[in-house]
Image (cartoon, rainbow, N blue to C red):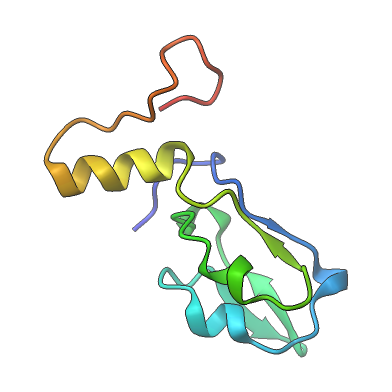
Length: 96
């Protein structure tokens, strides 16, 4: 399931990647694949900002502001049956 385009806080530094593959193992959305002994991002917009990849990367190649942004708002809306709201108001850039 894709969320909103170009709003995820996921950051990946391929030069820091050691090729351990933990991000591929722990990502529930299939954001990563292994290619040429390094992780590669398949589609950044698949990221739901859960933070599993960053928490399991011992090399600092990944970071994400877990539980923030529009992806979290959409998940909360789906779980509660309400409209997505990230709580940032209509004036904030990038707000859902």
